[in-house]
Length: 320
Ligand code: PEP
Image (tube, rainbow, N blue to C red; front, side, top):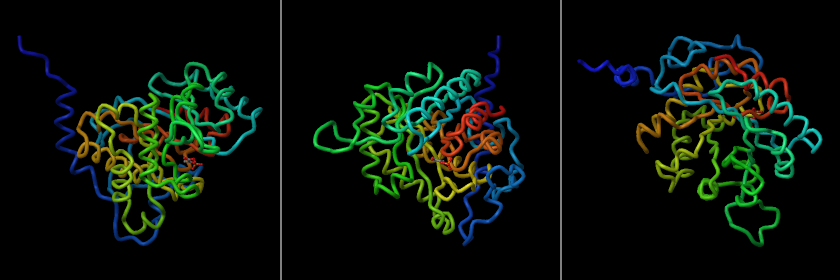
């Protein structure tokens, strides 16, 4: 008897054929952020055909560079330096309730301020992972105010952010510092969300892919293909963080596709297919469905909108 055709393999071959035609480079000549790249927060109507000239993707994860649409999603909240203990506990309860209704293929995490890790962790339940917003890379000792990975692990932390643009800009984290943190987080047996993304000027001068290349190359030094299972990438264009400006799905997808191709080139196809690449930058309950509909966007890192229980609940339960 002839073997049944393997549809997944056929699909892969087809996508290999289509990939070069679908992956268009980011524009390099513009000297301002064209309105076609931006979607005003709260206004899904800003959705336009992007520079790749592709039709708007539907909410189904179809028709793009990625060959494996069955990656799970990960939605993570970043509470930054917000909340006091009572508020943190209340929000944690709301997140836990919302996550209880979320789809099986959608993981949820919250990255909370250090002082509230234990209290929030006690409330989150099984469906929501506890995350921290940073760490220090030394084991222990005379590093006043620093928080080690063993401390984080000991209070039940699963995810730790590294390289958030606010740590890079305000606290001077270099790619070398970030790399040490990444290795330490993985060495401790936790998962790392490595944040990368270009500044407005870098986007305007066509440097987006180069910036991502550098931040990935430097941030992931010493991270093997095997270790990549504990890495999540958060692509966060800095001009979109906390500004109310969100990249259009097409612009975001274009960079996500580049990042996935980077993994194919620098690791292998298996790593590229499996790595979760979140989008971050003014994600809210109005724009989440379209963003998550893009084939290479596998979740979101959410700042402002993760501080409101109802918004974050809607984001976790985005339409798919
Ligand atoms: C962030 O903190 O990573 C972030 C994307 O913030 P916001 O959603 O507020 O833009």
